[in-house]
Amino acid sequence: NSKIRIVRDGVVVYTGELASLKRYKDDVKEVATGYECGLNVNNFNNIEVGDIVEAYENVEVKRKLA
Image 1 (cartoon, rainbow, N blue to C red):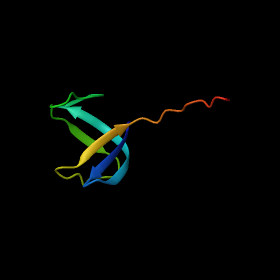
Image 2: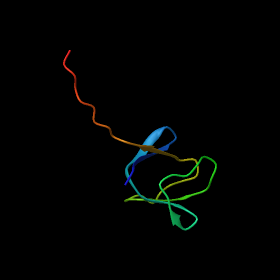
Image 3: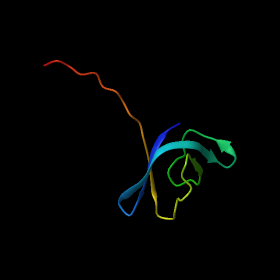
Image 4: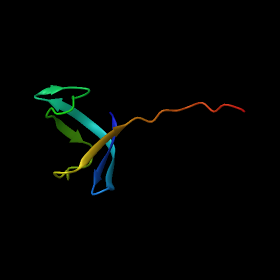
């Protein structure tokens, strides 16, 4: 369950999780640039032509004392 956000006209219209990513009928973890794929997004079905889908990862970094 990757974290994603959908950006439309410079405004974030959705932040949540990607339910699945498919290349043809196979579930995949990534798709190379320029290849077609299918997205299933949790609780969002209003993706439009021109929308930008950004995947991201939250990483915890330990604090260091100076």
